[in-house]
Image 1 (cartoon, rainbow, N blue to C red):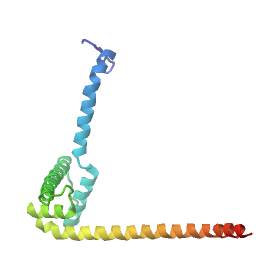
Image 2 (cartoon, rainbow, N blue to C red):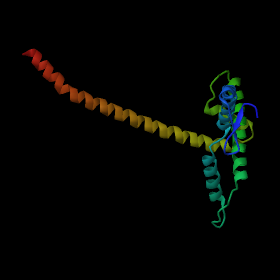
Image 3 (tube, rainbow, N blue to C red):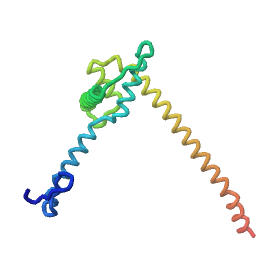
Image 4 (tube, rainbow, N blue to C red):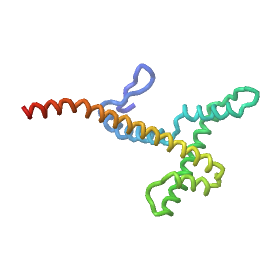
Length: 168
């Protein structure tokens, strides 16, 4: 074993001279791992989506058990679908001579991919999302306006006092 010494656990550790050469390889492995992790969908979210849907369609209150391989397959299928939908939406965007994909591009892509049965429910969901955010934004704007008004009212007596002091 050239350049390595045995550890008590049966593994090996590189000598300091060798560790420097191993750093780029370790960094490359970490970068590759990070890249693979970026492509994965969060397992907890996939699990929750699958279980919620199965609970909706389960008959007789029977709980459906999904094994680990099936869950990984759901996650990979969803990832592939998202990539395909993204590429198709990008094509719709380019046809319109734009560089930014918008919601209509995604809906057109679904139609193009022959998933048109999802377009109407998604439009409804998108409109609900926009309405909810518009209400939240207007509420935030009202709070900011009230805060400014209170701040202005709080500083108004001070300004009046300053004006009265100038008159004396």
